Length: 102
Image 1 (cartoon, rainbow, N blue to C red):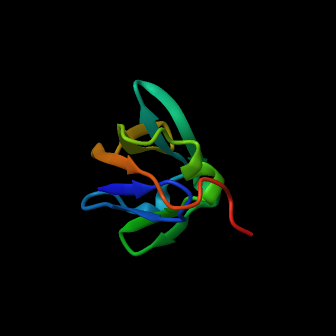
Image 2: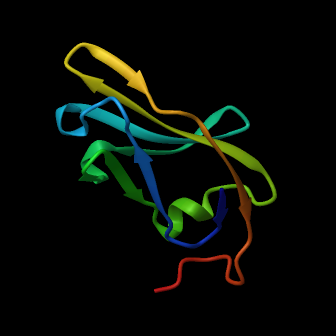
């Protein structure tokens, strides 16, 4: 997966065995070099049938280091049960404008 700095991509996490309607809490986490760079709570997500999606902001993607790789995952809770989605690798590339366009 590729993320272009300054863009607003939508990240979709699909579930096969977990009913997304029962997820109480959750966080989308994007990491680079072991550090959490972006954390988005479940309140920022769209919940569909068997998936949860998050749209990153321009500012969020600009916070990612260009030319590097990272990992994204979704940590979730249903009651006292905690789970995590599969880890997806991504690489970051530059856009033409290195700033938020309004």
